[in-house]
Image (cartoon, rainbow, N blue to C red; front, side, top):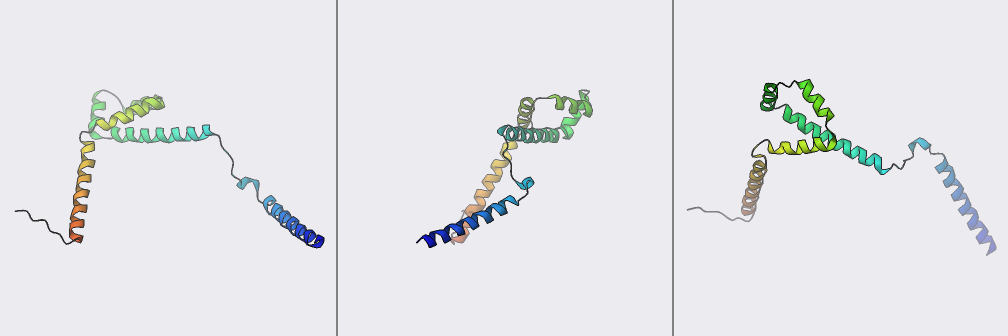
Length: 135
């Protein structure tokens, strides 16, 4: 019995030594590091700011808005300078208010949804060999 325990412990010791050798040979630069939540929050805030800035820039590139700003006496450089001075919350508020600038923005998505529903009903009726007769 003592021989079996001794042989078993030697095998376990060899496996552990080999495992430590393999783990020790991995370069430290490839190890993952734990980052703080501040870095994640900052990255998310930066992504939101970039998305809001893209939305504002898309609206400013519109012909109608560009003409109105030009009539007000603002050049493109002045507009970009003022946009860069906005805080994150101000920029987000401005970008969310731009959705109401174009009338009928939500109506288009409702029309598309209704068309999809109508097409699905027609496909289901066709698959079940039903017909709609309008007299």
